Amino acid sequence: MYFHALFIFSLLIISSSQAAVLDFCVGDLSLPDGPGGYACKKPSKVTSDDFVFSGLAAPVKLIPLIKAAVTPAFAPQFPGLNGLGISMARLDLAIGGVIPMHTHPGASEVLYVVQGEICAGFISSSDNKVFFKTLKQGDIMVFPQGLLHFQINSGKTSALAIVSFSSPTPGLQITDFALFANDLPTELVAATTFLDAALIKKLKGVLGGTN
Image (spheres, rainbow, N blue to C red):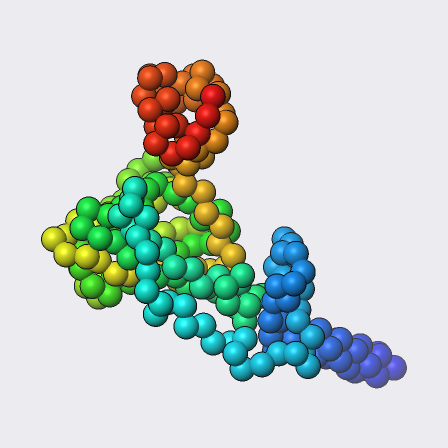
């Protein structure tokens, strides 16, 4: 009797697990994104194009302020990634280009240098220890989830890198923009950063902040 009950229970577990398995969940971009990603597109509407993205090969337009451009292949651009726990991006850096200090709250990052030279690093949260390295063509560096990190073109030619993330929507917060590109009052920024008010107003002017 015991073994019979155990056998029936095992069949139920196998059946329920098989019913819950989905091969994929192509994001339905017509619906809002949620904590668990996008809702799945109806299987009958999924096509091969949902699993292909050509945007990383498209011409890039550098942002003059940072002399760099990031071309994302995240779930909103590449719905086939939805629910798979991965994404990619292309990083272009002109001479002197920089990706300012920033974090990805939702993912770890791996950077692969395709061409050029990039100085990259991150800061640990436990003791603020800095880990940085000048990367050459073919080098790979990992940036743990949520930690402040940066990339700078330290070479004499343009640089190109491909980055991958452990989430289809890694998120992004750039420290400079968080402090100086909004309406957070200057006196509060000064009190929490120990920066001079005149410098804060100057940075707000550059990045579009107010107050």
